[in-house]
Image (cartoon, rainbow, N blue to C red):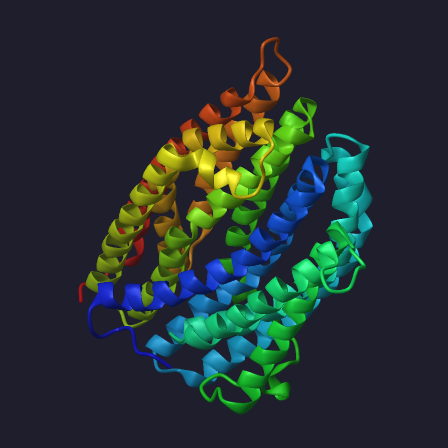
Length: 447
């Protein structure tokens, strides 16, 4: 356990965000390594895996439900020096994780065909996406265990073990991807199925390692089978904080589904370009996301300790750190967007779509970083509905006009990217309004 109620706020944020960002980057390499090898199979394979991987956002939305609630409640318990309650929250989050794993496994296979037929630009793209997901869904189900174990550690202020495990899983994936996708060393190439299988096997290794860590090394929060009997009141506490954040990530899933839908008539190359560009963008969001994830436990511990000044300072410092990182990445996209896409494909049409996407969408990087900081503070304060409201407004103001424009003569892809940037501006302003409101309502204590 690490006490975040004393010492420099900025130092706490940096020391927590840096390893988390590295860990998330390592985890993102799952998809980038797969994308590198899959891109050698052609645009249809890239488009299929890209649209299939979007399905993972729906699963991640479920993981967020108990992850956000677990981090916030455990961090508050740590701040209040209540270890018994922290252990109750941890063990109940494991129960929820098991339930969600079953939902993801059964539901994933149930909607697999319908989902890909609705997004694929052609039959080849649809088949590639189905094959990829067929082998990746078990890994997605296991993500719930990974997230539950890592979230409890983050709530106690510890991030190093999770980062190390993530690094190992990516190394496993990097080793398996060329063997399973391209058949290097075996002569039996599985193609896109190999990409899904490599990720699933890597997640299995990660769950085993984190489980071993808890059994042998972790002492503050521990497995207590006697606490696994469902406690509906505890579930309600976790879900009250977590459901809005899960819903917020679900909105991102819907956003990407809308984009794939409105650009499908432009063919596999357009979907492949967007898929690669979206992966690069998501990688570049990692610094802001890591800072947001650090804001949540730092602010939550200080909120539990009733230190309003330190909660406000956490938000100010986190917002500045996020903005600085995103400015640098925005300039990189403006300067070398085509080179970033060219790392994964040499197809001229795909590079053109992806680089244009990065050039335009990067204008919203700084405001997106601010929105992430707001999300972190909402989690810490235990009210994540404002994030849902701002994200929901963004989705509505994006999806409806995008669907309308896609049916008009002269519709082109750049209209979609311009619309997306405009709606992020609206989202950021709404998030700022709600942060000020929550501070007035919840930080009435003066110390």
